[in-house]
Image (cartoon, rainbow over all chains, first blue to last red; front, side, top):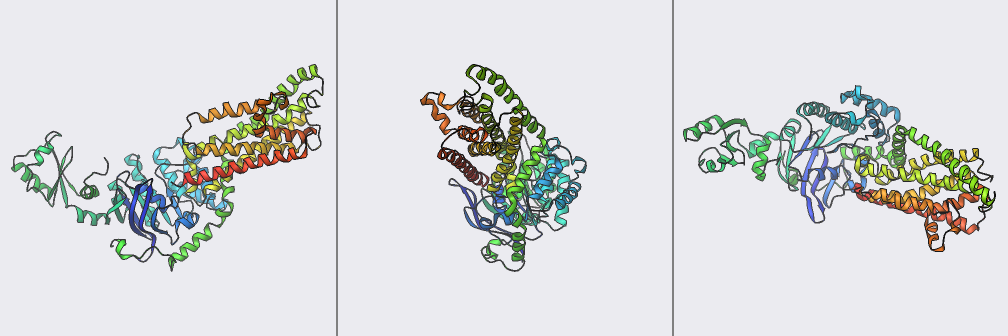
Length: 308
Length: 293
């Protein structure tokens, strides 16, 4: 707790009266992997842009590496690697050229940039694509190239805004593996996501954000312990009957959430709860017992699912 | 770990220990970008231009050959044959029209390089946002664009002038100065175009309108193919506000010693320089606003 590299206090951003970020406070330690988890429109990207020193805050205080983004934007950005939500690679240049021009923006000598570009192409598993056109790359490859580009200046902090949104499962796993390696090397990661599994995989600590405000903070395991039960029993009675059945579930589980397509029963023992359910004469079409996840935490905190 | 809200004092005004070290490192690391950032952006643009270098060269060589031949040789035969070899402001038609064609060539580079790459950078392939995520500042992005376009324009105008010499269209000894007049003309007009294009969040035909209703009439009515005096008085204002007219008149002074009062020559330079400054500052302001979301 002694060495925060990002400190936000009551951070705010308003657009024409609308508060996109409404007074959030957090601190990220050096070497930590910190996640902002929340649905689309929660204010995650806006927060990332303010930390990335490309969006002037409307209120509160913010310090990145001990510097104020309002006064030292370029200085802060010189120490960051930024992976934006949508790729902005230069499609008029080839893959390796994208790294070369970007490295120069940090004032690095050409030879050093060239050496680093080759290392990063290897890291991103794009060596054989060095001369390819950017548009010829798959979505996952473009993401990896964007991450390689963000690493060209050997940043102290890597900002990742929805790094795997829109990727297929295999591409996501490759990307997670690369990010995990960075984490092992001690790079500070600040990432936003609306995927709970991504947050669980990559983050040491998470804040759950909704409507521009922080709802909870802690490690994934802590949050699940605090806001959910050990297990969840998911049952489906058919979309027309779910709400009707819900009325007859008194006394079953610690807590019940009725979603349009299924009913979630929070409990310490899912199998036992299922037996009680069938004993009571309720026979779901399908049933599933699983561990609680951050999705459940989010549902508990906001009454909504992450991906709607 | 507890919530930071309660535990932490407000953001450090004077960072201590490891933080000040990181801050000092950041400040050191940014020196080059603060000083040379505009050139890094230009470097990027040059690399992109290299990918369409063939087009750049073909147009830079093809245009003067075609235009000088069509206007300066073809049309000139007709004009000079009917009106005499010194009928247009005291010189042959080729000599008269060549400086204007040179300035038009600069305008045509401007209308290409200050539209498409600007729309691209802000919108279609938003690389300006990528640049701005590095230590590069919005103003430097615009400067870099201006530098790179000026370089391409200088090459184009230089080649054009070479062909003018080959066609024997430059009798004046100070003719080469027309290259720089053309450059100023193209940049003055182009900077305004860049300022305007940078305000567009969507191209719903505005750029095509600019080509059709601004650039084309400007090319036709700026004393390019015939002296402005031949136009009725109520149309001459098109020439007076046209950067192309100011550039053309001045380049004629250098190319063949066209006679005009000194104050007018100074006015041409000032007018073009003012347009350049207005457009440049305009684009820089818009870039600061658009990139800070």
